[in-house]
Image (tube, rainbow, N blue to C red):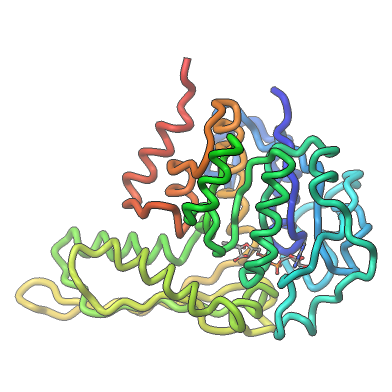
Length: 353
Ligand SMILES: NC(=O)c1ccc[n+]([C@@H]2O[C@H](COP(=O)([O-])OP(=O)(O)OC[C@H]3O[C@@H](n4cnc5c(N)ncnc54)[C@H](O)[C@@H]3O)[C@@H](O)[C@H]2O)c1
């Protein structure tokens, strides 16, 4: 099986979990013994088929370092789950643009190394897929890397909430370039949004009339700090829209991120409140907290997305690829129900002869 060549834009917590995950699952062959992955094999691909061939960042503690070292450099605070041997991939300095916000400028130390020619590095590395793992407020930088990806002839995966795959102009550009594009804003494996939607759906199916509900969370990664300053409103809109869409009637719904709590490190606490009426108007309520570690929560879904995008490349698909976007992202070009999105993805990854 040929490898899937991936370039990472942003060597933060998410990148750390992904690189560690590839190492962790490399030697596992038996799906029954595999803990923590939704798909050990997907479309015939195993996580060990994924090869990181290039990486970009701007932090002086990461630029110029081997990727195996850069993923554990501060301000990353994702837990170390496995030893990663030297990978021979050195982190390049990318363009800073709006990569650092007012709040994160105190925790990110911008490198004074010269910027690499990103398109050239991508071409020379043989990358076929670019994974955009920039901070959520880095809108200009995300668009800039999408453009570099186009110029280098790579598929683009937008993990961030910037509207790229869900923006028809970008989708057209990738279609014209005959390249796949997926996004926006990855869904977590143990995701508060998915859990919230599933609970509401289940209750509604059982005849409960939800009257009010919220889901809010706090986290301690750099990303939570950036969100607090730059994307709190955007995240609130995206999450609230997707949660509202699961209810077949109007209700008071709020879903979003609330705050940064540094001592949580990479942990995230998600709070859920659901209030409704059931038989003869009897009241019910759920008051619940989910505690997770943020970066590993992206790992399993990212491994699925990378392998699904490779399938899209092999089939020469172009533009926004809806079955992948709807399955793995909170803001796809078209919002579909969980069941339809799952079914579409299953059909998509089924081999065609
Ligand atoms: N569970 C998850 O972690 C999860 C789920 C859904 C979406 N996301 C999204 O993934 C993205 C990454 O999350 P994270 O927790 O890894 O963030 P992070 O802040 O830990 O990492 C971002 C990295 O990008 C680097 N960077 C900033 N500007 C840059 C530039 N111009 N060029 C190159 N590198 C630059 C930073 O130095 C940092 O290393 C965010 O947009 C987040 O919303 C993450």
